[in-house]
Image (cartoon, rainbow, N blue to C red):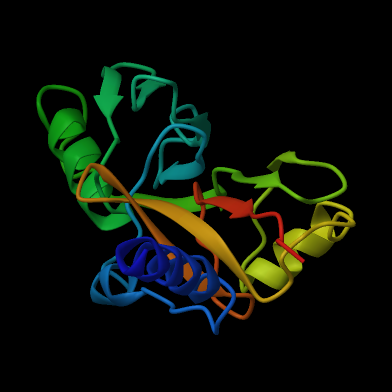
Length: 186
């Protein structure tokens, strides 16, 4: 009798812990916040080779993380910053095509973010600079009727591995993030 009461009380305590104030676990995201933006598939780049109008153009990073440029062919862009990609392209052009190439790379359009769960229209949306989770919910048509309106689960790829944590609605979103709005219990 006594053991069953203790077991019931323990189960109730564990169930009610989910109703308390959410704990945000953003430490893994904060450690990566100062890192430069790394390119991935879905990004659109504006590449300018000074003095070479035929090579200057917009290039999309394909599913394999590469861009395809005239003369030098496929160039790996995945996981590189824009500055690193500038140096890679300059070195490839220097290898028999141009004497002293000068290259500028800028992100023309960032890869999209994704929002799932209790929103009106879940899906993939274009990234906008300065976006927060709350802005992302607004872009997706707002909260669904059963949505938890206090926090969201955010999944971000850090060092090649997906990391998920609970974040407040004011938390910044980065390109490629996946936001999940959970259902509330009451």
